[in-house]
Image (cartoon, rainbow, N blue to C red; front, side, top):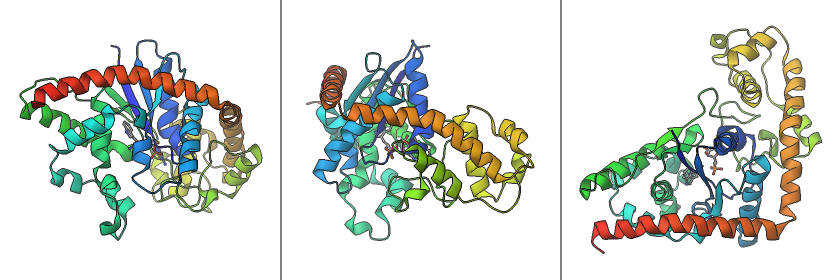
Length: 333
Ligand code: AMP
Ligand code: TRP
């Protein structure tokens, strides 16, 4: 069956191995399936839910689009655009926010994490961020949404909002209820310095993540310095329990080599982490360095990137505008 795919990545800089293995690598596989219609969005409206520097934001929008293309998404096959250029996303978000109970949003754990202790100071945008995400997805009759594990709760909210709109307005099947596509094997890549913390763009330590633009030397150095424990590598998954750093490195190796944890443990069981690290660094160099080189090339070709984004926005606008017009009719505007 052909799938309608939508996903988004925030242009907030430092795209890393977690973004690649948790999301972008899957985008590429979905793009490569001829049957699928794919839309990949640079979600700049989501980015401004926390303060952004205007020049950096502009640069990061292009860099995120460059990363999509450098990773293997074909702009002739899939639509690539930035969210702020298709106004239906904001309009849809307002309408959906008027029918989303606060109780649903109050449950969102990402808001609690990002807002931190001083919730009063967090922006209203950060609070309703998941409703904008629902608008992104629902405007395109999306059937499947490839994301990392941290977005699962937002996807459930999107499904609830779709059901509620259809029911409240007696508009059966108006919004398609989308399915999440979350990598089963390893959907959460952790910090290289702390196996209990997610690998994140905003971690103050650059050693905690492999950035997709890191040089070869940096990748080798970061893997060498990655935290491990003093025991040898076990040969069964059960024995990785309570060893978060070991689990993370084994998981990263499995994910980037497209193999199961079992297979990796069979290969490395009983060996030292230095063996695993040497091999991991080599695979990362093979997979990540060509992407990194291509990103750098594309970033210098600003006109090309801008053209892709403008053409993508025109195609996305055509689809989204129709859906908003239908939404307006259903509501009574
Ligand atoms: P963001 O950078 O927050 O816009 O995330 C873009 C995509 O990368 C989303 O699908 C996230 O779920 C995914 N992602 C971000 N960090 C990680 C991570 N540490 N492990 C796995 N997936 C991640
Ligand atoms: N909230 C997502 C993240 O931080 C990004 C995002 C915005 C998204 N809109 C989306 C992902 C729609 C999938 C579908 O990672």
